[in-house]
Each structure stands twice: as structure tokens, then as C-alpha cells.
Length: 199
Ligand SMILES: [Zn+2]
Image (cartoon, rainbow, N blue to C red; front, side, top):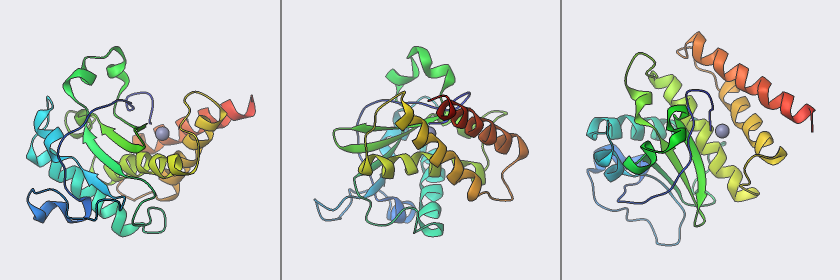
């Protein structure tokens, strides 16, 4: 997760579509073999959510497709477990911690769910495409981490996973990432370094 303005965790379901072929694929369920893990962007979840619409879905799907295309060694295909990327749902939006949210990744029934608060796409602090890829890449790294170890919350393991995810963001920095986003990433990384030092 990213704390401060962005982060999140939760549960739910709906329909889907394979991320890499999403945009032109238009809508039906994935044709991938049933037991082959895959990364999907959950189109229906975007229709459900407060700020969501088809274009939010397209933007997220394009960002995910681009991450997979640019960084195949960090996100090998097929993934080790199913990864669903979806919009935060209405129930989650009413939870007390939602004011802190922007995105998170949770292990739910053996599947990683990357949950996006669609406010990252709108308003004065809306992310540009490079920042969106950074944010989503961070959360997708957590999905790959879950396949290797525990998804435990607040613990040294959790801090190490955050360190790895924030380091991933900084080491795949894009020139279009704005200084405030980069500063925030560096600040969060320092926070988790500090927590580990005190372990
Ligand atoms: Zn994280």
C-alpha cells in the first residue's frame, strides 16, 4: 500500500477481462485456461463505484498493460497467483480509513486483489500516467510477494515488503513522475527503513 493519501485494503468480486488485451477486447470473460493464473482488470467494478466509469477502467487497464509490457522481468507471465485489479467498492468507500486510501493489495482466498480508490484519477492531486504506473506497479509487486511469503500485516515482514515495493517505484522512476510524488515515495521508504532499523 501507499500510506498518507494513498492506500487501501479490502474485499469483493465481479466480472473481468485479461489486462494485457483488455482495451480492444471489449468485454467478455477471459478465455485463459481455468487453472492458469492471470492478471485481470475487473471492468464491472469500475461501473459500480462512485467515481468510476468506462474511461477510468480503460486508463487503469492501459496502465497495467504497459507495466507488464515494460517490466516483464518484474511481473513474469503467467503470474504465480491470480491477480485482480479493481476499483474500491461503495462499501469500502464508507469505511473509516478510506480518507487515507488510494490503493492497496490484499490476499483474499488465495488471490491477490489490487484495490484502487478512483480518486487517484480525479481532482487536484490526480496522478498522471507515469505516477499511476508507479502506484499500480507498487501494488502489483505486493501480489508477487504474496506468492512467496506471508501476507501478514503490521510486522517486519510487512515493512520489508513495503521497502521492496517503494524501492521498485524509485528504481523504475519515469521522467514524467512529478517531484511531489517522488518526494512522497522517498519519504515513505525512509519511514519503512526506520521501522526496520528499530526491529
Ligand atoms: Zn505497499
